[in-house]
Length: 285
Image 1 (tube, rainbow, N blue to C red):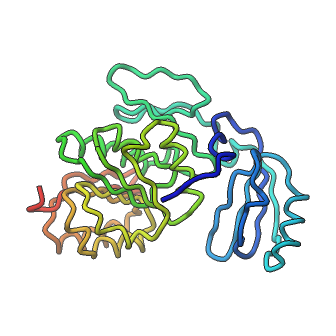
Image 2 (cartoon, rainbow, N blue to C red; image 1 turned 30 degrees about the horizontal axis):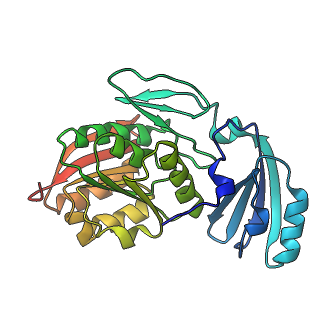
Image 3 (cartoon, rainbow, N blue to C red; image 1 turned 180 degrees about the vertical axis):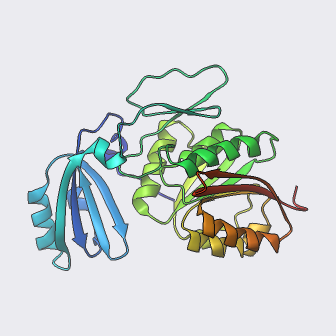
């Protein structure tokens, strides 16, 4: 389970202006000396680290390199927060969900569920076609009131886990391999006061597929999804949502699904480029 230092829990309740990004080769042994209100976190990718700050941190980076000489500063960047996210964050309506940054006061309609989402430096605000289609699929899957337990693989900002909980799920396990993503999801869960319904775990997707869920949601890399669909844990679920797929990848996944006792209920595509599939496992409902 993920826990956050108190100094970080209050971050992202206000809108950011600037991002200072330090691109390092190597893994941080610890980031305790970096913790402050302006340190936004470390995105670990393979053998590289991306440190994010809301103000310039050259002196702290210099001290970090002295303390951890195995690290090597490759580059640094300064950009606006809107540039990083691909545009200014604003409220967006998808199905019966109203997704809004916490720094914007936006009232929802009587038929909407409001989700406050602070993505930080993690991607997943609801604007990507696969995320939007996942939200539509969650809405449909949860209407029958049979999705009491949900497994969200590759949770990112936690948006899909939050949508499942808002749609009636009683227990949601949100998993992400990246620690910063899991920490961001945890902050959003606390922001929406859904701590009692959603648990965030940082770890490998394969290790959690046996979790006894009614619905599994996977909006992840194709190579990982391909292995998950082959697992015994996948067939123990009642429903599934598979997303993040491109056209050629969708053909491969659907060939795999054709060999399994499943019913493909609906498929979404965005300009024949991005695909999302929703279906049921026969005999488990």
